[in-house]
Image 1 (cartoon, rainbow, N blue to C red):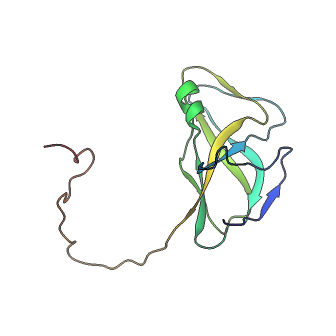
Image 2 (image 1 turned 90 degrees about the vertical axis):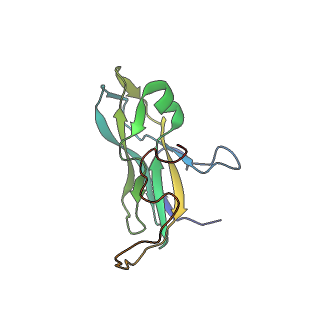
Length: 145
């Protein structure tokens, strides 16, 4: 298990995994008072958390499925990437895609945080790519006869 340095400037306990097999930790909104998002409005909400990821890791900020399905609230740049060299507060860009105003209460779970390893690449310029069965078939091309 990865040990992750964290500064918690929020009044809430550190996020925990809901189940043994959960991939994401729930992030809570740190607000002085409730914030209402009008339809199609977006706001950056703070979480009070600052982390120090090791090289080769990123943190992904993802929507919570319940907020999306029930209220049309999602993370605008999902998944948002937090790079290993970022040391500021984790913010969540929430957007209201519904037709109704939505109020976020202080301490409400607003997003998930998933820690993932990544690999950086070096480009190799070529004239042709190896052929595959799919080829250049794009969006919606698989599974059709």
